[in-house]
Amino acid sequence: MTNIPIFKLEEFWKKYEFSAPYLLCPSDAETWLLKDIVAMADPESKSLWDNLSLGYTESPGLPALRKEISQLYDSLEADHILTTAGAEEGIYCAMHSLIAQGDHVVIVSPSYQSLETLPQVLGAKISFIHLQSANQWKLSFDQIQSVWRTTTKLLILVCPHNPSGTLIEPDVYEKMIALARKTGAYIFCDEVYRFLELDETKRLPAIADGYERGISLNVMTKSFGLPGLRIGWLASRDVDLLQKVNSYKMYTSICNSAPSEILALIALKSKESILKRNREIVLQNVKLLDEFVKRHSDSIRWVRPEGGTIAFLELLLPISIDEFTEQLVEKAGVLIMPGTIFDCPGNFFRVGYGRRNMPDVLNRFEQFLITYENLYKK
Ligand SMILES: Cc1ncc(COP(=O)(O)O)c(C=O)c1O
Image (cartoon, rainbow, N blue to C red):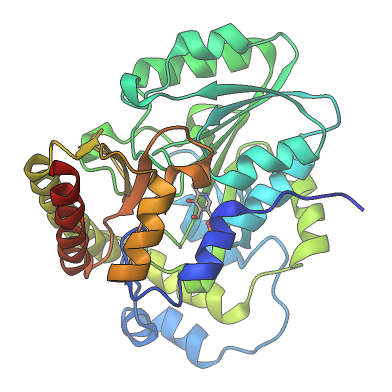
């Protein structure tokens, strides 16, 4: 039996998500109520919802949903989309489809854990590119070039980045594609935080639009705020690859949940208003974080995020981030995510700013932080 490493981030959520009263690190935008989504339905989708039969669904995804998803991209059609159970099934099936034992894979780290562990489990030869806070968590082209081989099969990255919320610079994006094209490598870009760039003019083209061997991963979970639907997708112009990924899906979920497909369709038809509300929450919360970081510049430092719902802060007090996290949740009921979950050295922690209750939770966090600041002053 293959040994699969413990999924540290998801184990952390399993332990705390439904027991800690004040979550300061969720990465999904404010969750919508079912009734609010149903109320957004146009007559055609409402009829699909009212007359929904709870049978199996089409394995690649409901055609109308795949068509609606394709409209999130500049150059794609429904055939370029394969729906998956959340983003996670997309990662699992894509990695199995793309990687064979011994393949050379380049991974930009820190990342979402399965993007790092699955290539290892599949026997890839891996070159990691470690992003650094000193470089604003930015990916440089030199870093990519220095590990690139003519045989490199796949480059894996997350943009907007998890956990820092930074974006790739446009010139690095272009050069990265040119390099991959030269040697025929795939680029897998986890874009689950796309559409919530703080400055919308900085949104990069999806990799599936920008590169013929690009695979974009996205989901209803994060920017749209609908994790309970468990509807994600892979987008690529390489339909043969999508077919192969679909073969893996037949061993995992087979097809998506029928109600979720219709609800995702309704939500995507109303994407402007869904994203508008989520953007408003995010922009207000980032302003509060700006002020918070300024107020506590002796004990907290950050690289301001550029997109998504998460930021990576650094605790400058002489206490380990793991210990601080434990004390915080135990004494104040507030949950942050320590950087050790991302195997990230140093005293970093992730904060989520996509939820409506963030101001209250941040305030509780601040009170706790002040007691520690005073402690270390003495
Ligand atoms: C970067 C990234 N990719 C993928 C996922 C998995 O998303 P889902 O829960 O929708 O499967 C997450 C969830 O935290 C994530 O942060």
